[in-house]
Length: 75
Image (tube, rainbow, N blue to C red; front, side, top):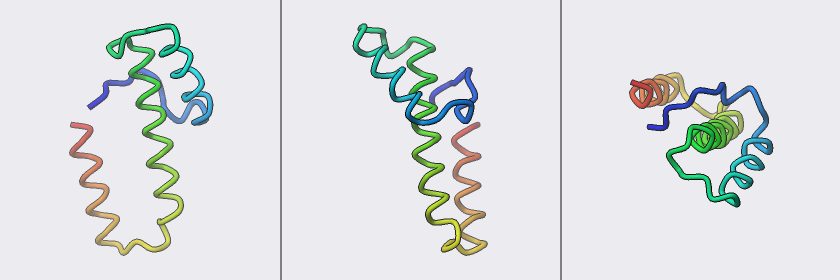
C-alpha cells in the first residue's frame, strides 16, 4: 500500500501524471513522498474512471464486495 499525504482528488489525473513524469525525469527515488503521492493520485483516478463507467452495471452485493476490498487495502 502506498502511504499518501496528499488528497488524490485535489488534482486531476493529468496533473499527477505530469508531476510524476517530471520527478522521474529528474531521477527522484521511488521512496520520495512526492513520487508516492503521484502514484497514489494516478491510481485513484484510474479506479475512479472504472467505477464511474461501470457503476450502473453493479449489483448491490457487487458494490458491497468492492467496498470491502477497498477498505481492506486501506487498513
